[in-house]
Image (tube, rainbow, N blue to C red; front, side):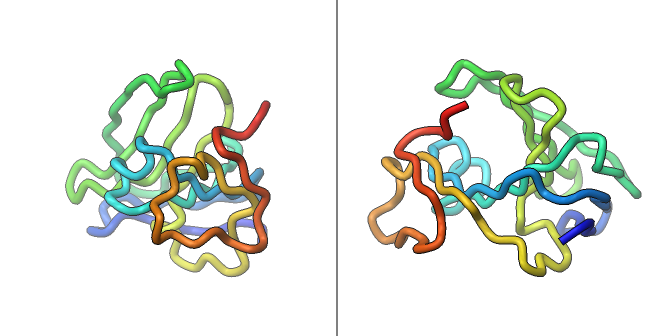
Length: 137
């Protein structure tokens, strides 16, 4: 799938992505669960240069991950929807929360990370490569 569009819950922030995803990961880490308020986060990783914000602006929040990487979460200041994330360990790459994409088409996770932290009622996907911790670099 080349290119897609998305936005926040209230519609104040709209974006488009012009390239293909670099990777799609389902993450079960504590940070992703807390940031999404869900059992896991599905993150679509894209090149930063392929993201065009068409409307609105995001606010951001930074924290240090267990890996020591500085993580930045970008969200709508009006409705709070998290849209983008990035980490100091992967410059030039941002992740997009799959729930913010208008039409996900055939985008699906290729890997699952931090499976050791997966909640007991979250079944593993049968089509992904799995890593107990983060994906090795």
